[in-house]
Amino acid sequence: MNIRFSSKYKLLISLSLIILLFTLPTSSAVQPAPDFTVPTTSYEDFTLSEQQKPVVLEFMTPLCIQCREVEENLKELHPEYGDEFIFLSIDIDGNPIDYLDDLKEQRNIPWELASGDSELFSTYQGTSVPMVIIIDPEGYITYEKRGVPSRNELSREFDKVLEGTAERIELREYGIYTIAILGGIASFFSPCSFPLLPSYVAYYIRPDGKNKEQTGLSMGVKASLGIILVFGIIGAIAVSGGRWLADYIPYLELIVGISILILGIFVISNIDIGGHLSKNLTKLKDRLNMSPKKGSNDSSPFFYGLGYGASSAGCTAPVFIAVILSSWLSQGFQGAIIVLILYLITMSILMIAFSLITVRFKSVLERKLSEASLWINRISGIVLVIAGSYLIYSFIMF
Image 1 (cartoon, rainbow, N blue to C red):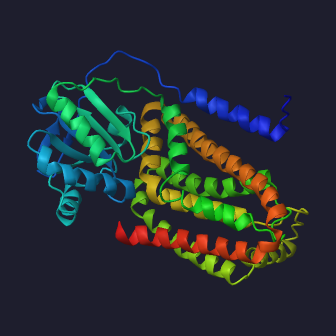
Image 2: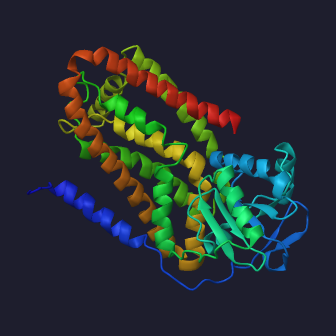
Image 3: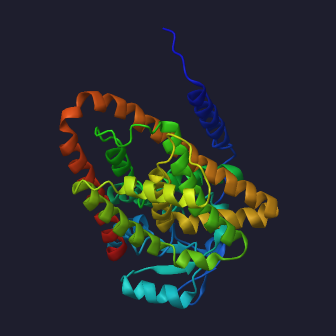
């Protein structure tokens, strides 16, 4: 069977293969976990090599949604394993101990919190939070998990350490550029932004002809530009020393949630907000003597990209900033810029790929569901309302 790919698909596949090659880890002999010393909410320093018990490390940030899920799982297990293990949550944001002490009290966390930094996170090959690591009494890593491990999974790993049957594993070694690519992937599939992808599909797969001129490539490029603008600004501020920005990023999640909720209401009401926006932009271009190109005057994918980037930043900005600052320390200004570019390229490729898939499905659904356009529009509006409500709920609850 002869399968032919257009040039845009070939380019996308080539770039994806390059990313895959970059993200392959290098192998090394099993070695003890990297030693470190951090200040804790006990107002005493914690040094890993001085511990006589197995240690459970959780790399986190105070405003991370998934980190709260890990925290709840650990709380369930702490009464049973708290005497046998040392639990320690390390804030990679580097917040002061007084702040973490208040956080510990507010959330009723029964173990100590520590103030870490981007350099420590990079030493443990961190690409996204939460990240859970279990270290046996001899200082070797027996478990590593990026994301949210279940209580049962953690319990099994704890029991293995206590029984002396846990297998020691090597810390997967990635270069700083590979970490940037993995971080870009994690940011694209962030729990703050990922719920918006169905709304992207629902809004653009509408069999009413309003998005007929859009191609997957043009949609993806425009949405990617929105993501690039958000993370580019954050990265530029981080490189210039503005780590403080991470404290205010989560509020973008609330703003985007409200915007998506309103957009969903407009779609349910059959109000073409995208059309009105495009007309106003066209008038603005006319006043500025900028002639828009035919077939490319719909700027709504760009604004979707802005919202998607802002939502993702609500969860991943601390990690993003940590990766940028770590590359600054190890590679200098040029290295930080390369890391920033790789991060943005990775997210852009994923958005373009998703847009191409969206349009491909759109052409199929337009033929089969043309008579159900009113219901499809209403369903897409409901999806947008649910996505917006989720972002608002997660901001309020976490």
